[in-house]
Image (tube, rainbow, N blue to C red; front, side):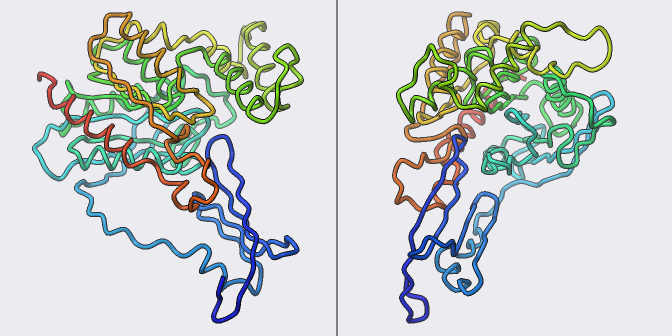
Length: 374
């Protein structure tokens, strides 16, 4: 790099996690770090004396010139003793009542935008949908951001998360700006299974979008992703559990303990999330869903392999659903960002959610919900 007339030689290293989190590291010839960048977390660490080099390697992002055609409102709603906080985006054009969608996050504590490891996927989805004329509610998960639990130490079960999403749906049902007959669910990863669960039980759901959703119970998906990731690194003995990474073995052991253990007679159940999840089969749920469904997966998804999308589609069709659309996007990850196959690709491109995915969701939702009969 030419830094004010001085030639500075660097070595560039990049680490990418299975979820697509990218860390860039530039060193000198002795491999002493000069600049470390984690773009999606807005983190930049600079060795003293390398500030001008850092500005060249990781320039400040340019302000967006995009004009948003929606308004944003901070909202609150409750599920029992849990106070949930979120953002409701409402289209500026068109006439109320608007069609609407609830965004349902994936596993782990997520804020309403999906800033932790999900590259603002939920915020981008919401804004894309609202620019297309669909109101959207997205919320912080319980215990995250501004969503408050009365007892933060109480274990969260999978059923708790399902009822939180139900509460979001019911909140939209109470808003005068929302058409009660045209509310959809948009679920990512675990949220896709939640969307299937609610749609299978509630005929009021107008449509669902399944983003990187699994077709099998979560323990089987965990095993599959562990085998896949191990086999991508080395030849793996499928009869030897020790061939899997240590963290994968611990998760699988937790599922086994939940499957074989007994539910506590009283008090909180620390294994409730595991116990309830392994009893839930997304393909069986899909057979009960009759509303329009859009299924999207990334071809390079290392957490929910793309065949899950095909299996979900087949299950929906087997149940008699006549309105199923499927798309698998080449070279996209679990978070619909580019897979880092090409190591020369710019880091800021690796953290961008695919514009094609956002457009596909917003166009399908706008068309599908506008055709719903009042």
